[in-house]
Length: 501
Image 1 (tube, rainbow, N blue to C red):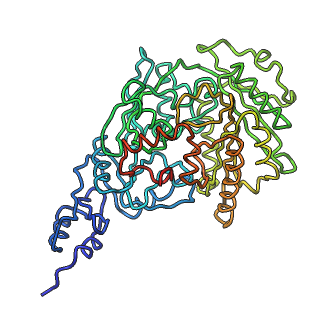
Image 2: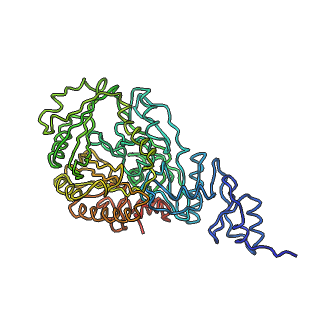
Image 3: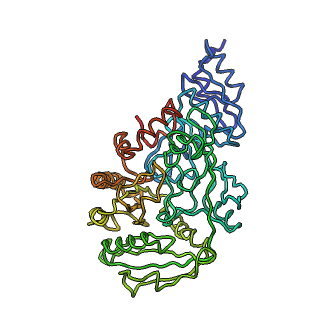
C-alpha cells in the first residue's frame, strides 16, 4: 500500500500556474495550486490549520518561475530579491484582498509599476509583488475643475495624450514619460518645470490607496490628511496607491527650446539660479558632457518657453538677456508641446537597440544645497571620465525652489534653492567590478553632500541604513513613523527601500 505523502512533498510537487493558486501554507511559506490539490495537501497532514485559502480574484496570482524572476529584477539589474508570488490584479478589489491576506500572514508586499527602480526598491523577498500596470484606466478630463483621475499603473505618456485632447496638461513631467503615475508619486516626480509649479506630488488633489492593513481609503488635504501626506513621496511605506486625481493646467501648442553652452560649472549654475528666480522660462535644467580631453567640463543649460495659448510668442532677446553662455553655441528650436515632452523616446530606442538598457544602472541622485552646489558638484565630478560612468551615462542638474515643493516627505536642503544632481551611470556586463565601485562612489558622495546639509532624491542606488533614512527625512520623520504604525502596523509594505528595521 503506497505511503501517504507529507504536505510539504505535495506542495513541492505541484505545477503552479497563474490563475490556479488557491492556498498558502503558512508553515512551509509556499503556495498550493488548484482547490483540489490544496485539499490533497491538507489531507496529507494531520492538521490543515496552516493552509490559508487565497481570496477569489478578478485577476491572476502568478507563481511560475518566469514571473518570479522578472519581479526579482528591475532597471538597475543590481538587486535580485525573489518574491513568492506576483499579483496581476483585475481590479482594485484584488489589491485590497491580497494586501489584507498578506497582512494577516505577515508577507511583505511591494507595488511595481514599470520596474524602473535601479536598486530593488519595488522587490519583496519571499513576499508579494503587485503589478500596477493593469490599473491603467484614465477617466474623463474634468474641464471645470481641471483635474483627471487615473489609475496608478497609467503611464504619464498616456495621461498627457488624454489631457491634451482637451487642451490641458499635468503641469510637471519627469523627463522619461513611460513611468507609472503611482511610481513617481511614491518618490516625488521632479522635472524641469518643478521650479515653477512644484513636483508631481505637489499637484495631486486626491488619492485612493490600500493601506498595509488592507483598508481601501480615499484621502486628500482635507480628508485623512495624515495619510495623504504620508503617501505622497512616502516610498510606499504606508499604503499602495491605486488611483490619483491630478491637477491640470492649460497646455501650450508649441514650445521654444534653448540650449546654451558654458565652460565652467559655477557660471552655469548661477545662470540657472537667475532664470528660476526670475521665472523667465517654464522649464529649466541642464546637462554636463565630456570635453575633448575626457573631462566633464561642457555644461549645457536647457530652457524652454511655452508659446500660445499659455503665453505670448517667446522673445529671444528678453529671455536670454544678461546670461553668460558662449553666444557662438546657442541652439534655438520650436517644436510641438508633446514632442518636447517625449523628446527622450528616440534616445531610449537607441539605448535599447545598443543593449545599454540591459546594463546595470547604479544611479546617483543627490539634492545639493544651492549655496554650495558648485563646490559639491565639482568635488564629485573632479577626475570623473566617461569610462567611469559607462556608455550612455547622463549627468543632470535641475534647479529647484524650496517654496514650490510643498510635500513634506519630498526632502531638499534648507537653502532657498537646491539642485537635483544626477549621475545616471551604466555598467557593462563584462565590467565585473564596476557596480561595486560605483556604489562605493555613490555612498561617499552621499556622505559628503549630507554633511553639507543636502539630501538625496530616493530613486537611485545608494546603500542606506534606517538611521540614514531617519536623518534624510529629518523633521518629517516623526510623522512618517506615526503613519507607518497607524496604516501599516505589521510593517509589510515595501521592504526594499530599507526605511524601517
